[in-house]
Image (cartoon, rainbow, N blue to C red; front, top):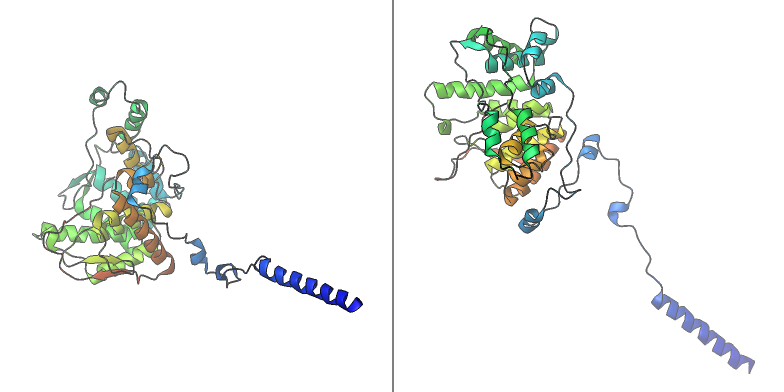
Length: 362
């Protein structure tokens, strides 16, 4: 009897143990990504993850009025250059810099050059004055707005901010082209990245003045290497100019971006460089000149940063996708010095392919 009871008890225990093994929850093991890993390099820690790719319909469904979906605007890095960009009038800054220690720094000389070529009377001018759209008349602008325009107040405020004569007060300021050239050369020799990039642009312009066509010109290997060095400086102003040069559809020149070897699309390429400059301190918030202009003249007032404007107003869904991809690849190249995913190819452009040339403005 006791033996029978002992056998029954053993069978119950065995059955219970088997049931537990079958029904117990599985052991949770940490995935490989959660395991301890060597500490990343500082540059790697600074790089955000690549953006998730959205479908075209998802991009079209985005509403800028919805909180929480906007690109975050990076704070502008305080510098003399940012002060220049934000100045509504340039004469006070010019008066402060000329014949002062601040104006004799590499960046100071570059900014004196910029202000004089934009605003002064340059005798025997041989370099182009940067294009500046003529200011609109306020009364005509107001008459063009509908009284029921829901953006009316925002558009008027933006117009008053952006439609200013930055060159007011320069009427009596003159300089020879030779002296103007010396300012730029001095800034280049002192190593200012913005001056180095602009000097390349001026060289190409001089070739055009000598009879060359834009679509027959190209960047030399030496110029491309200089632009890489300029980009490595992380100077946001230099990044805008260098990016503009690398985005133009020069003869026998193209950029292939990424691992798939696709030739970059010029407009998305150009806008990606601008967005990258925002990451490094270019003023891209709601007071950015392009953001204000688009609000005033087009009614595109929901954008609170240049990134917002470029992604949602200035680009197709496809271009927005490409811009985000290019921006991440460029940031990685700038931070690590590895340009293996940004390849220069020397090949003729396909017949009939669109050509784009971007010019500097404000």
